[in-house]
Amino acid sequence: MRIAVAGVGSGGFDDTVSPVFGVSPSFTLIDAEDQEILAVEIIVNPEDLCAAGGAADRFARDLVGRDVDAVIAGEFGPEETLIFSSAGIGIYRLQDMAVRDAVKQFLNLAADTVRDIRRGIVPTGYVTSTYGGGIGFGGRRRRARGPR
Image (cartoon, rainbow, N blue to C red):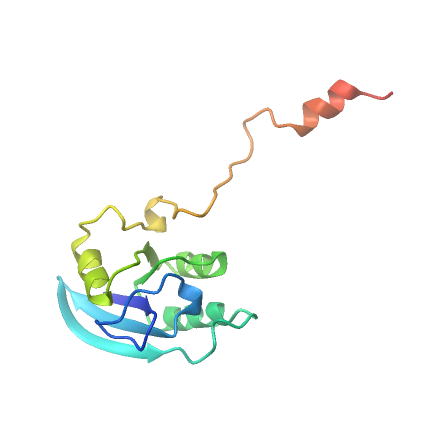
C-alpha cells in the first residue's frame, strides 16, 4: 500500500500534516505492508499550490500517477476529492499531528477521526444533496399562485 501525506514543511516523518491539501509544500510517500514501513520518499511540490489556476489538481493527478492508495491531509478541495475518488484512492482527513503519528493511526485504523469517503462517510465541511422524492418548493408555489 502506498500512502501520501501532505506536509507543512520539508516532508518526512517529523513534518506536520498539512491542514489543507492544496497548499502543501511537500508530500511524504510511504510504502507499507502489514503495518511495516518498507520505503519512504519525499516529494517537494513542484509548483506553488497557493497560486490560482488548478495547480493542486495537477499535483493530485501526479499522485494518482504514482499509484497512491490513500492520501492524508486536513482538508481537501472538491476538485481533489473528485480526482482521488474517481481513481479509487481513499481520502483521509487527519491534522494537528506529526506525519509519523498520522501514518501510525492510518495503519492501525484505530481512531474515529479517520474518514474514508469511499466507505460512505462524508468529510465535514462538505454538504451532500439529494434530489427527488420530496415536495420541493417550486412546483406547488407556482401552481398555487396561478395567473393573476
